[in-house]
View 1 (cartoon, rainbow, N blue to C red):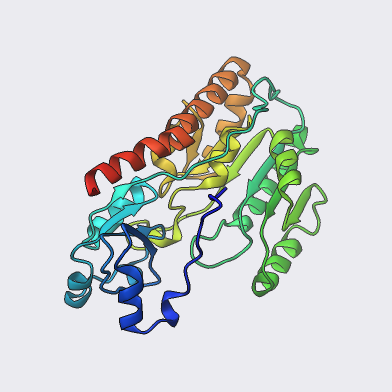
View 2: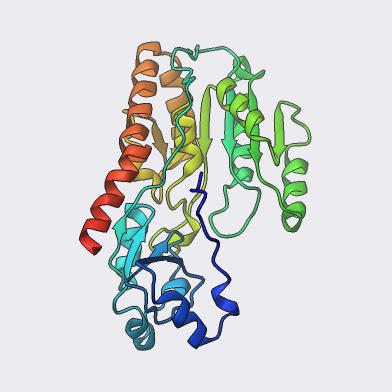
Length: 310
């Protein structure tokens, strides 16, 4: 919700060099998310926002070092910060703000041996940090086939779908075609997504599956917003152990991480048999998000940043 006196700036790319300098010079602060290009900024302070730890975006050639000599950088996670440091950029972590729902579903209980509802949320695409819905489908099929008492369980796959990714989406549907209890929800509305979170017992996240995060950090989950949303909505959240997820989810305290599919299944069985532990996990999960991703936490971090700059 921006103030009424908000002014929308024209595209910097459409400006000549001299016009861009004239436009930026009066600014106290310029926040810039790079596409790999850099420029000399005459603003009092220029802050580069770094979200995807992909090396081609942060090539610090001698020319770029000169252009960004007076810049500061912020990153969206400690994981991104660590990778940027490897690229020659020092940044300060500023976690995003997450809306906290009034209804936390903290009292719901998962019961062992009954049908379970699994949810995974993320854009349907196969490039960059793919959410690996294919792995989710393969795991779920094996889970219900190997454990008949859970045969009525459901897997819900929700997320954005662009026309360019239609072929990948169709391949996923084909993979799951013999299993009606795998439910695809492309371009789900926010209200329906809230219902999906509310009805899910477990939230599963497979982004970064079997990726070498040292060699290809951009293909992991750099932070993971949907796991955080799940943590505030009463889902037991279990994520593949890579990228920024590891700095937020403390295994066995506020959620779970896994590196192999049998480990994922084992942890589901263990927590399903322990309602007291379930309550503890849910409470710790919500507290984690409040501590790190609330409006208050964001404001404190930004105040610290601006005190340092100004």
